[in-house]
Length: 214
Image (cartoon, rainbow, N blue to C red):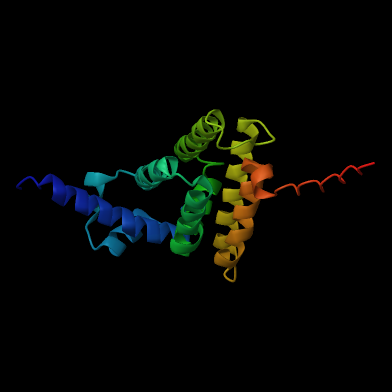
């Protein structure tokens, strides 16, 4: 059998991951079988096992693909002159533009991470990478004087991650959730966390009365 070109292998691998993503989001990790993924992808079991030997390997492939996409988007965010606007654009991508099944899959992987050691290791690796990316960004912005948070950077990063987790969860479980309508308020909250003086300007004190001339 002739060896496939690297670009053909990459395309087949991506196709399998796309199909596994839909299957896991639709039926969950445990109800989905390798046979289901084969049927979704239109390939044989032998062809699937060339690329992925287990459902955990598929989860690892999906998480690594998402981590790489996040890294690319984060580089643009880190280089943006307007951090808050760039954060809003990043939130719009993940909470509004991405299809809802991506959020359902994230929740599914997170739950599975609590009972499957290998999935837990994969999940925590990607989650830790995202958290560290934001910590490094906030540390640099603070050092440059571009943000002035009232909490330490570690706490700021954790609060930021909790907000993101909440938006992911709400979009995954609530079909009527309107992330687009909520996003401006979320951006306001984040702006206040980054620099309360800029996001909520303190009114200037009234001018002192002029001294009377005797």
